[in-house]
Length: 450
Image (cartoon, rainbow, N blue to C red; front, side, top):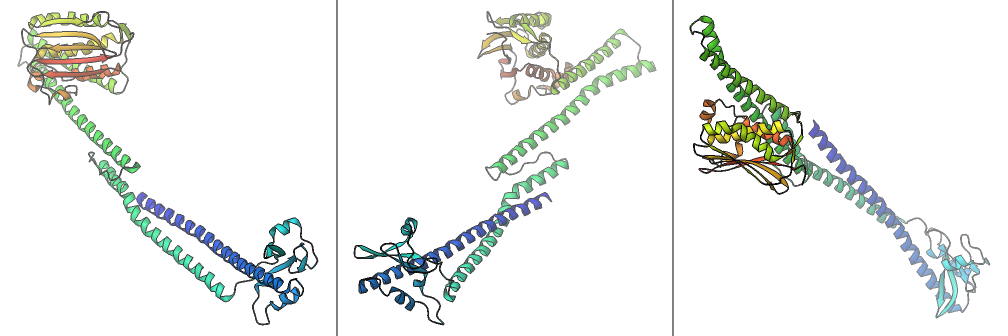
């Protein structure tokens, strides 16, 4: 219904514009033609009157008898008119000698009337002046037929222009509204649940920009929906395993098929702790998505922050026979961060680094000043991440090695949480890796002082 309305409006605008243009052009052309034709008739009559009056003066060497001569030029009964009757005649001194219309014999011309008059010359001498006394008479039948034929031509041109405007309007409306029709169909398809809709970009104008923006929106909605569905499935999967273990232990203990031992209660407690970690991670992500992740900013020295993280993971690194090192530039600017949250970020990254670094390897915590930013990096000498998987490591529940994560009780949310917290600090996080040589995760933060 909207498209039909737009089509009607588009064609109506073209028709109204064409009609107004044709009417204005027609009126202007008609007035120009009539006034031009009248002016031509007057000029021709003026030229004839002046020429004949000059011949009369030259033949008689005076204006004597001019009134009688002019009366002879008047139309006879049954005749139409004679152009000389349009003019009055004055002598060289500006005295009317042949009156007509508002001019009477012996009237004296004023300066303005003399300037508006047409001089009658004999040789180099002005012998008289002609003055237009009355407007030109009505058209004769031949002249009326000429004007009528001109009006008919204008009318035919107007009808042709309107018809052409209607045809062009219909053709252009189809071309103009085609993207809107396709957009409408795509939107209806999205309402039916088919979110991944792409409309062909046919023009490089505002409509083309609209279609391109719609395509980007549709692709993003489809991606987010796919991500949401995958995340829902992953959450259900992560919750199901510890719940099934807990449920199995509880039923067995209740039925007496398994005796209650400290080892079994430890196993149940471990599964409950895994559930608690997963719920807390999901809560952190939901707060970050909603922009409600509260940060308690403090001025922190990068060296002290990395030293705290190193101290926390030193026992685990020693247990895995991995060297945990610090590499910090001297006199680095401080950063404004929430230290507790940033420790959480670095802990997630270091935990991943230790998990993928073999015995005898090294994990290095680095801090340096580069390109107007403080860079905090965690580098390992592990086996690295394949290039095709590297762009996905910050996605939720993404696992480079599915079986290893599950066996070690990891949810796959650590790097996703790290990315959300860093971005909440208006920073960036990225990773680079070389298979067989190791991986580096780099955090860039704005310094509080330079």
